[in-house]
Image 1 (tube, rainbow, N blue to C red):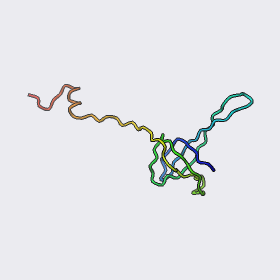
Image 2: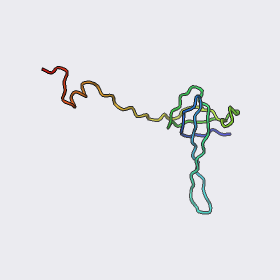
Image 3: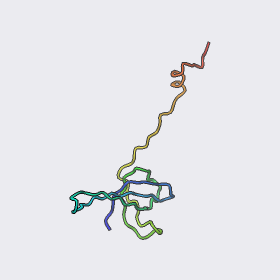
Image 4: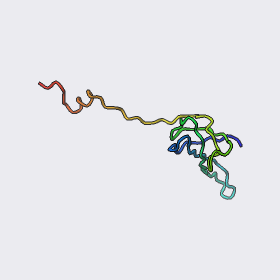
Amino acid sequence: MKPVVGTVVSNKMQKSVVVAVDRLFHNKTYNRYVKRTSKFMAHDEKDECNIGDRVKLDHSRPLSKRKHWVVADILKRARIYVPPSKSVSEAESKTGLSTNAS
């Protein structure tokens, strides 16, 4: 089978990820393109994938009941939001309090 490209939807399992693969096909009756999504479980040996990553999957021997794919490589990493940490000086300037009160 040829490799497929999809987006990681879940990484809650150990060494496994769920990847959603979208495909478009032409419906001749309505003359429209229809999008269908398939979910595949894939083996991630190093536990590197995060939710939102774009990955390439290769077919392999059956690894478990539903797992027949292996993550070949991560094409694009997801941007993970990290909230800015509040430092002590920023908090003091906003509240008007200082540690050297006279």
